[in-house]
Picture 1 (cartoon, rainbow, N blue to C red):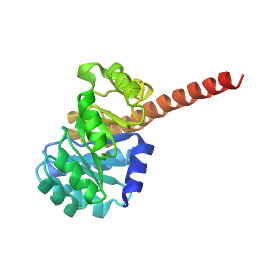
Picture 2: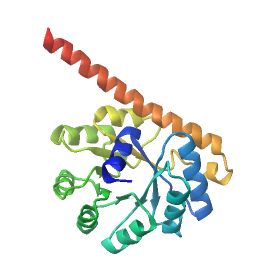
Picture 3: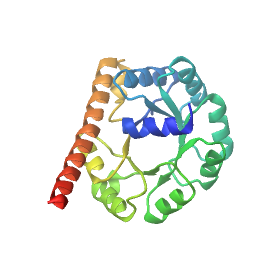
Picture 4: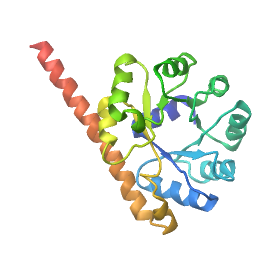
Amino acid sequence: MKKHAVRGWIEETGIIAAVRVSSEEDALFAAQAVAEGGIVVIEIPLTLPQATKVISHLVKNHPRMVVGAGGVTHAAGALHCLEAGAQFLTCDGLHPAVIEFAVSQSVVVVPGTLTPTEVITAWGANADFVKVVPCAQIGGENYIGSLHRMFPHIPLIASGGVNQQNASNFILAGAVALGVGRELIPPDAIHRRQQDRIGELARRFLGFVKAGRDHLAARAARRTAIDED
């Protein structure tokens, strides 16, 4: 899948599902359950044993999924992920070497940032999106809103502490997408193999994103009408 298509799927879906589980079997189950609920952008963190094997399996057997590697910290690890078939790379911190490598390979990269300086640095290095993590613990949607007002041209992804209560608020504050893990894929739902429950959570989070975007569109329409008057 080409870079522009991957970027488009992330923008359209509005959610990156972080599959933070403890085994290969759990990861495959979780990814399929989330995808059947409508969230097809799946991140497999490198903290998972056999992460590249899971990425390879998903890419080969589920062509409708957009599968990426999460928690990438260096270029060598990024290369292994791409060799396994990863279609995008995310980081939990700012790793310039990973961004540079991804850009050289024409692969979507989403570095992690926290401060305004890091946001500027990541965007200046040609990142495709800039993830703000952990955002809920340092001001939540108000912090995302502040960053969005400072950098309205930078596509921000809110991650870390996103849940059903605040998901729409992050979109309203200016996030183009959300990174969601445990709130979307609860550990007990994995243990009990509750595929329907995870699917329902996926549909809910997609609904939160849509509600936020609909509200923003309505707000923009009202402003246009006022300006035309």
